[in-house]
Image 1 (cartoon, rainbow, N blue to C red):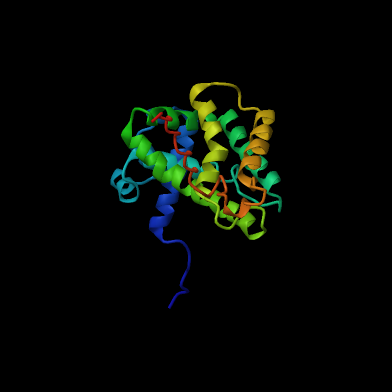
Image 2: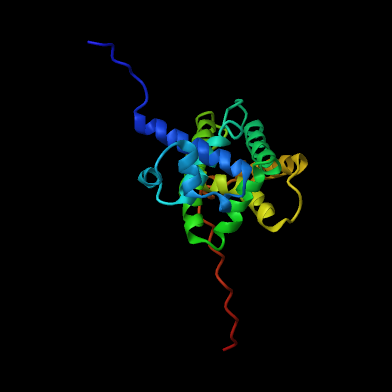
Length: 223
C-alpha cells in the first residue's frame, strides 16, 4: 500500500483558489465589474462551486477582501490598552488611505442602496471583525484596564464609528493626528469611573443604560 498523504481536503483548496482569484480581480478592476464567471475561470473551478460556498457574489468578494487585508489589520497586543487602540485604528485608516481603500469604500457606498451587498458586508466583514476586536479588548478586561462587565460591542462602536462617519461623509481627513486624538478621547470616556460618596451606585457610561431623566417639576398651584 502506498503512503497516505495528509493535507487540506480538495474542496478547501478550491475554496482558497476562489478567494485568491476574487482578491486578485478586485485589485485589477472595480468590484462591481468583477464577475462570478471571471473568478471561476481564474481559479479553475466551476461557477456552481462558488455558490456551494457563498450565497452571493458580494459575499465572496467581501470575504476575499477581509482575508487579503488580515495581515494589515491584526489585533496584536502590546500590553497597553491605549497603545493597542491607537495602533488598531491607525492600521484601519492606513488601509483606507491605501490602494485597497478604494475597494472597501465601494462596499460601504454600494451597501447603502443594495441590500444584498449590505447583508454580505454585515455577515462577512462586520461580524467577524467585530468578534476579533471584542476578543482583543477582552484581554484588557483580564488585566483590569477595562471593567469585566463593560459592553464590548459598544466599545467597538465608539472606537470605529467616527472613522466610518468620515469615510462616508468626507468630513475631515483620516490622519494619524486625528486617530491619536480619537483614541485618547474615546478611552477617556470608556475608562471613566464615577467618584464621590455615592459612586458605587452610579452606572458606568460604557456598560449601563443611560440614566433616566429627573422628573419634570410640577407647576405650583395656589389654593
